[in-house]
Length: 265
Image 1 (cartoon, rainbow, N blue to C red):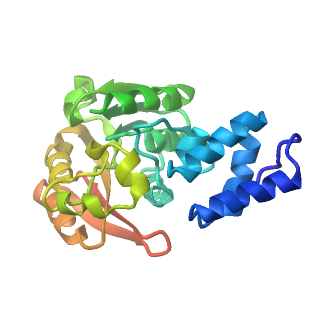
Image 2: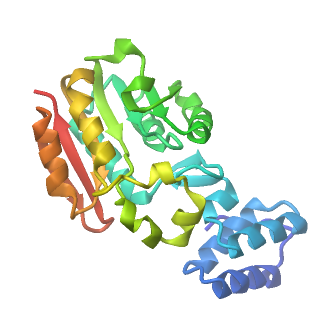
């Protein structure tokens, strides 16, 4: 837990913890530490606590999310990167440890691309999203690793000269079936963009669009990685193989993460 800001006494900390716990925050003490560390004045502290108690996700209260040890800027209206998606990054690095061209499609905040570029070092990084709020946010995050962010619908957003050159194509596509969006936790349902959540009737509409075009963009031996649910994984693997990719499923039970990996022969 980060150190508490000097102006705040133990009694203030206790009151923040109590307020968060009463609001249903499971990790109230940890969240209190982060909020206290972020606040510079009692007035600012009160505002941060009120926003969290009202149901705003902690990451949006703080203005950042931790992802693979990085502080990723997040803003209202932008999808908050999940810890389980770190597994996708790990799989990409294991599959293509010497990648030189990386694309983060459906990039949201740009967390995946930023993490990949940070780990790989000197790479050509491109990120793209259809949501203007995500594009603005991603530009703040990828700037530090020399990346470029493009606005548009999937591959239409990318520079044409990337065709046939991409070593890692990471696409954190929306995969919640339309009929299940209403069942999501309120933090996601009420505060994250629908375009980043709703994957269509069976949740795989965007995944199929990404898969069918991927071979034209990947370099020989390049890989496409997409996160999905356990129930959707067989159909996702089928979509990959149907597009001509050699596909396999990687899982991490501890993080409830399922990543389909497709390699261009």
